[in-house]
Length: 308
Ligand code: NAP
Image (cartoon, rainbow, N blue to C red):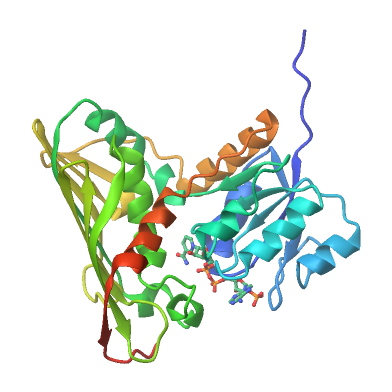
């Protein structure tokens, strides 16, 4: 018996900004199981496909689609996702999957695929790190995620507005990796959040998490100039594991490990296609829960006003 060949999934990409252009469009184009059938953005357009101003215009167009991928800022995603699911389309959400936990949960349960994507979990070092750590006793963990907001997010005012997550916009990538590689659950014990006087989201944060009885120190900084760091170091009873460059590079006791690298976004889109084919969803909110708990428990400090 031959396996029937599936037609490509007809996909609309919503929110044509930095990450849509840098990563989503190339990953969709490279996947034979997907075809870009439309783009949705208020001020931007993608050549070669029908473009729509917003989700309402897309729904009203009557265009036949199977799925949407949403790469707008988190605030406002819920309404877009809910409209797409109501239309019968499968939905992939960029990280973070929403501005609140409740709005993502409100999308469940449904009969279409919902995928809360965490691109950093597809970095080359993450699966090998999880495998190496399994069965070892973890002594301490340190996360340093320090980047220059002016370089990586020029003019993205939404990031420092309430609901934009501030320094947790990149920091949640570290938490998505930590929750994937550490065998137990993490919880927030203490947090300090630095809010610029003129902004609604933190520009730096310092967290003390626990993994069982093991301390996990997290330092997040959006004002790092010079060398940038996206590092996770795990001390174990059998050596030190370190992930660098956001999970792309793995060292064990300082020795660089060779890793196959197929790219984060190609992995995400293949997983989305596989979920649709299997009629399943993949909804994991644990990184966003940690951020929400940091906001709940965190001591807030006002720091100098910030201008891009
Ligand atoms: P961005 O450059 O600001 O692009 C987002 C696009 O969404 C905008 O260009 C805008 O296009 C559209 N949009 C819809 N509603 C919006 C609103 N209320 N405010 C602002 N823009 C709105 O942002 P991005 O860097 O691509 O980030 C988008 C998402 O991807 C975020 O969740 C972020 O965490 C995630 N992400 C970003 C990166 C990165 O390196 N930048 C990496 C991984 C993941 P129109 O004006 O045309 O509607």
